[in-house]
Image 1: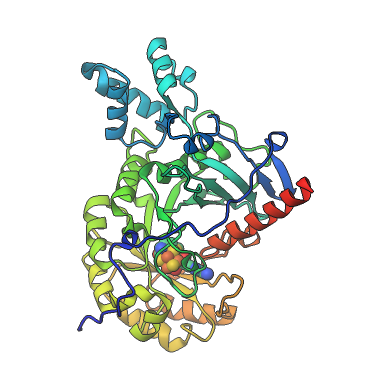
Image 2: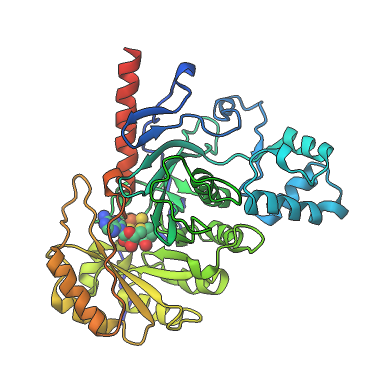
Length: 448
Ligand code: SAH
Ligand code: SF4
């Protein structure tokens, strides 16, 4: 099939464009308000939850050196940081191993807790570094136990506003899935996705990607010896509260390849966060040239946001299709390393009423995927304000699932989770904006 090109709308280097941070500052609270503040049932603000001092204020004063956090660093970064702190080269490896274990296997948050490290070194490290995580700006808990954190990141330049991202935890009785973001916003503009209506602000660093896992583990008590949160809502009984990681939050992970790869290395290191690569799933809208590299260099499970079986429709729903059409995408899937029935590709298919949900399309889907070890995840469309789409009727979703299923593919219908806190797939942007609006209203009311 001949490759069809988009008319200049897509760019392989999305960050080349000067995307600006489009959101307003969320809220600023006076000292008297620096405590958890209940806004409404299930929604809590933790204005400054990190143990470190607020590091945003000194940003404006370039002369003040900021302490960097070791939590979230890759092994190479940690080694360089220790060398910088004066740890002799002969000890570097041993110290990296110790810190690696404290930070990622035990969840240490304070240097005095690092008991097998000499007191003097602890003090040196404390003077130069922190073990802080990204700051939690808000935490929401859904009626169904889904938890969502709005995380405020460090600005990368003096004067830059602190960008924010969202991370979602979806507990089930025997497992817990953490959905993490890879970018602030997204350059792609899938028409049914609210994140896609927000311009890309920037790629997340490896530390910011890993930081989301650390925050979630802190908040749900998923470290050895830690206790579950007092509300206990939905947290599984299992020894590990987070069993699976999915890169399905904000952003296109394959447009932030190197940083995602570094983060995956920490997440999957048995001496660090120790998630099996079979329990880490990367979802892509179809950045074909990077799919093979993801397989070879990351070795994670792959999910493809397919959503349509004809190029004409996919061009509209998932505009990256104009650059990498369905045939090329599926060829890249067929070439994905070590596929087998135990290692299948997940194809995500959002159910849009009257758009992509016909019986004929279900049959075409089966035909297209022939020969690919696959599972088809049918996602009921999660609406957001202003969208032109509606979710398919339940009966139609079941008919669709049935056809796919009879062809021998598992076709689970993804139960929408956390819709009441706008934490479901594709709803992430709106949540931030709603939070900001309500927080601003609260603030205005408080200061009036
Ligand atoms: N950018 C990546 C990963 C993040 S999106 C990707 O597109 O794959 C995670 C999944 O949610 C994707 O399959 C995406 O298509 C789907 N999604 C986006 N908006 C949605 C919505 N409103 N309802 C249901 N699923 C949605
Ligand atoms: Fe970006 Fe994925 Fe949303 Fe498309 S579906 S706009 S790629 S986050």
